[in-house]
Image (cartoon, rainbow, N blue to C red; front, side):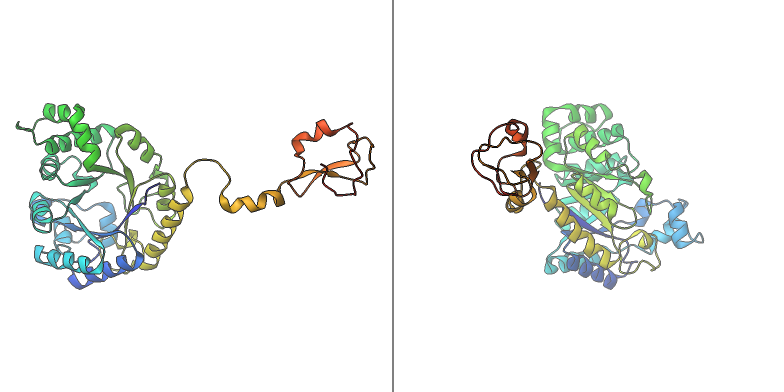
Length: 357
């Protein structure tokens, strides 16, 4: 199995503070995650002034401010993201960020030169954003929280159309044609990965449906991972065992900090344990071929059994259920030969416990 790509999701847990964002990068580096991911947006382009908060956001931050006001405080400038990208480059970890609007997508692709763009679950129906990102020929990680298979297919149609750069106007029929075309399928397989996700913070374990990872992989033939919003690390590790090729998990410097996502995020220690556990699990998955492992070979003769003399046996004496038995060690006559041995004559004298041969 290939190595699991682990994204440490800092998101907006920097609370709009550049130095805290750098601290989160340090935490991700220390955990040995492959990438640290932020969220890039212009609040005015993403959220209406009268948009309500989600229930989890109200529980985390109260109901005295609008979603616009809450998110505006979490916005970092493009200059700050330039500094964070450089900080990541110098720290030896990949910088990723999720754009929520076309202006932010262009900044990440054209100015920060990101070759991979993560599209969040909430944008899976944002066809103009999907088309714009795909037309830039970016590698895409598409999160699918709240989506059905048909909605995922529709999004992939938009992406396929953008990747093919057809000289025709975008339309629903054009998206479908692009998705169904051999060229579109080849583009999707080379450029797009999917993430299963349950969009709730924290996500109830009973709503996770990890087997959807396999369903999506079969349905679309694309590498499929998992963006986890559950508490703790158990579900994330299970996803890796099921074959998730990418893992994304929120983390924070302090679960008690103010902000919408801290409570559903991992502590620095938990993030480090998660990465260590994932590396163990992906190694443990193995090849799927059922043969003895090299470390087992030395124990075969110790753990298995042979046919032995249960009592002292004289040469020529008939072997019976009373004078032979199946006991350790292995390496002698196989217990599969037990019934064939009965009523045959002993070829020589055997002491009690001696292997028959």
